[in-house]
Length: 424
Image (cartoon, rainbow, N blue to C red; front, top):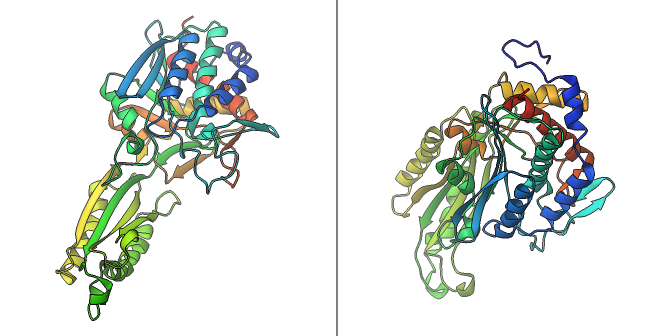
């Protein structure tokens, strides 16, 4: 796209562009990436990472706000105030990592909280989801400062706790289970309301205009509780056997939903996320209750209430068919999808600056994962997912090309200058 696109802001002056990108320093960026990866920060354990970010943002010269969302957990927000007359842009990134780093079944170097530089890549837990983006944001603001750029609007960097897709349920209680946007919910509930936001989720530098939402559902049935020796003739009253029978119509519903709710070239996936029933320590008793847990992906074009009615209608039919099975239905996560318009000024700015840095317009993508755009968009903060990662996920775990980190830092800096406006 060119600067002459109708209703678009004019592109930055070419000399100003070169002044800004010249101030992005690879060694500084790589050093911060290594620092943040080397700080373990699983969901619920973000405090040390938050303290690091507070120090980094204060050292950068930003006005820093510390939001304690609960004991030993905080959001950190750095603000570089403008002179007024421009829009406020926030760069938002979560500090918690997809895994803890202690999982025995994840042995790749990119699944551990230890940064490794190899073949032009940085490996390590969190480098693309999404500590690398936090380092890029910080380096982008430093580049603007070193270039002597005074902005009209404010630019903010928000490092938030508790974004990863997890939640409390049943016996799984505590801050290690409080994810799914809890930090960004606190952020916007307590006064941090920019005009626009960029989320540096791992999009391979694609522009994600839309993403699916997610709804987690529990379906359960009961059965008799009796010693193995006394269940002869009543084996079919075992709750696990009953759930096996229920699974067949549930799988048919899943197949139909995948087709009905497909969107943007993506199937509406439903994951059989978990099943629980019985007592491993006492297998001599029939299980009195069995639960099946589903993760239903919902496109941004379908309200969550409509999706809930769809799966609940299946439940009601099964309950009528089996009235004595003690069936239960519950939704315990509800995260709507998010969208931003193709012709939004933020998208046009990213397009221009991506093309300047890389030589081409960024690809578009619809994804089935969720992000904090679900939270921000509900508060009127137009948000796009656009961040660094490098190729498909593999056994090595998380990794990002250093070249990609440098390029997107330049694009972030230029986009902030364009959106916030440069004070002459």
